[in-house]
Each structure stands twice: as structure tokens, then as C-alpha cells.
Image 1 (cartoon, rainbow, N blue to C red):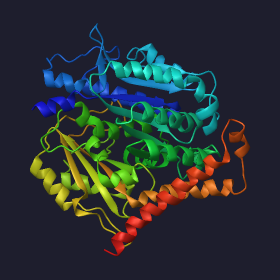
Image 2: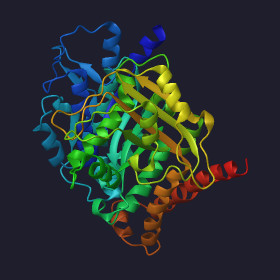
Image 3: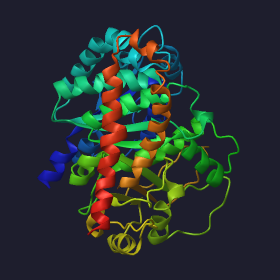
Image 4: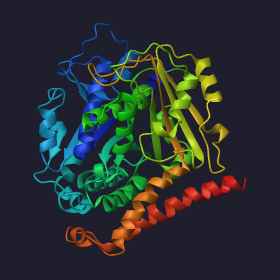
Length: 454
């Protein structure tokens, strides 16, 4: 019991960077507040008394003020003020402490170098000072949860600068990143510089994060169209869907689980993940609130559905490569250990190219907290849900696709001057490309070769 109590005394600091990171983070806090019974003003609406263990779990992501308000333990950072101003004037505006917002006066112009050097350098000291104050208020800091996108200049450049600083000052602490990657479709990747920004930022994520969970707008948009019957999904629709997956992955960090409870933190400690670090995520069931559902899905059905490539929120086929590790999180107030054990043993990812998953790669987490959805939102209320995080060698396909676009421009030195005039040097491009497009992809292929010859 003491071990569990100490576990729940650990705190996390969430850092939301750039337009995407801020908007996605704001959606997550909206959902967290619904789950924990916290009103937009930070006051708790639940009438039931929390026991001491509940208080420890609850404070993993929130801090309590002297007036009894619960405030997200978070920081919102952007190089220009418009997105932060929208959050301040929005539904959750009163939830946050004004000191949790830091912004500059001009945006990074979709340029990694402006986010890392020119503009980022002007606010990094202020950000680190605010983080130190949040750390000082923690009794047992476990790590940081980062929200960002790597296409733009702030989410790529400034996030990289901050990650390096966090590694220097808080080296042993975990860093978990929820990161939006460029979509294969240019509809959601309007910047011609996104491949440069992405390769540069991925190098930093590879070096300084324990795990990066990847999402892209095309995959999430496709799920919204297919499963929620939304013809033209907005960023609000997509952010709320991704927030449901993030909630499932963090629920055991915020609520009591079971004695058989693997979570994202334990997943970070796996040997294979220490080498791959970039993972895909799926979430089921995604059911429209407009439809009346009469059938209760079994955990075997949900687990199999979650392992389908179309369920993943990043565009790649996890079944083409070799599965290194899988975390399957089961959530619902009727979760049974035997049902979960049966589902995990019976469910198998569809495989191809002669690869298979490793029998010992499944880690299962159980949480009995009922599923919560946004009132009046797109998703139907369900009794049980399954979220899968897969570490597989086929994640290399995402980087191969981006690296191809990078190389097409870099070979002709296109747009490099816009980075050089902000303080970057050419070796930084070649070094990042070598680490991501060559060494990382080669590492994935070496794992596959070992499997073929085993």
C-alpha cells in the first residue's frame, strides 16, 4: 500500500507549446476537469469526500490553491499572443493562473531557426524560471508532459530548445511528448518548410524525450469522417478525439488502477522503447453520439479493432514491420481481469511482410474509472474503451516519407538561407538528417533483419 501511495504522490508538469500544443492541451484539460469534477473556475463540484489516496492521485496533474481551487500544473508557451488570448477568453479562461501563459510578440514564421535561436532565445529564460517555480511547488516531480507539433517554427524550434534545457536541468525526469506530425496530404501541411522543421525537431525528440506519441491530422480526420460521420472535421473535432486517447493513456496516472496495471510511465522504461522512442497510438470505440448503440463490444473485439491500421492516429501500417512493445489500456467500470487476460491472449495484430509480434511484448493496463466524453460532443458515451500504444519498426515509414521531401529540397539548397540568417549552420541540417533519415531508419531495419533470420 505504501508503494502505491508513493506512486500517486508523484507530479507531472504539462507544457503546451505553439498553436497546436496549446489548443490540444486546452482540450485535454477540459476533459480532465470533467473527469475529476472540476468546474471552469477551478472549484470541485463533486460532493463526495476524497480519501487521502484519492488526493494523492488527484494532485498528479493538478495543484490546489489556498482558496481550494484546483489549477492545472501546466505552462502555455507561444511566440505570438493570439492563440493564448483565445484560451484566456475561452471556457477555461478562469481555470488557469495568468502566470501560466508566456508569449512573445511575433510568430516564428514556420521556421525552426526562429523558434530555436532568434525568438526562442528571448523567452527561454522566462520559461525556465516559471518551470522552476512549478517544480518548487512539487513534492515529488516525476517528469514533464509535452504537447507540440513539429511542422511550425514554435512547436519544432522552441520545443527543441526547451527540451534540451530540461535535459540539462532535470536530467533524470521523464519527458513524454504528444506530438502532431505532418500529414501525408498537403491539405493539412500548408508549409513548404515542414520537412526541414520536422527532421530537426525529431532529432531533438529522439535525444531528449523518453517516448514520443505521434499523431497526424489526416489520420485523425479520416477517423472522424468514417466513425463519427463528420464530413469536414474541424480542429476542435480532431483535438477532442485525440484528447480521449490521451486521457486513456494518463488515466492511471490520475486515478487508481488495479494490481495488474501497466501504464505509460512503465512503458517508457522498456528496453525496446529506449531504442525506438517514436510510437503510434490507437483508440476505440469511436462511436457517433447521434447513433443509439445497443450492442456491448467485448474486449476481444475492441482489442482487435484497436490493432487495425485504420484505428491508428498516425498514417502508417504498424503491421508491416515487427512489433517491439505494445501497451494496451483497458478502461471501464466493468473491466474484469479474466476478460482482459483473455482479450490480450486472443487478440493478434494483422501482420505482413513475414514479421510477427513478440509474445512478451504485450503490457496490459486496467482502470475502472468510467469513460467520460464531452457533453454535447461528437462521441457517444461508452462503458468500456481500449487504447493501444505500439512500438513497431514500421514507424520508420513516417520518417522515410518526410525524409524524402526533406532531401528533395536540401539537395538543391532550397530555402536554407531563411534558416542561416536566423543563426543556424548547415551542419545542423546534415546531422539531423543523418540521425533520423539514416541511423534511425537503419536501426528499425536491423531489428527486422534479426527477426527474419531468427
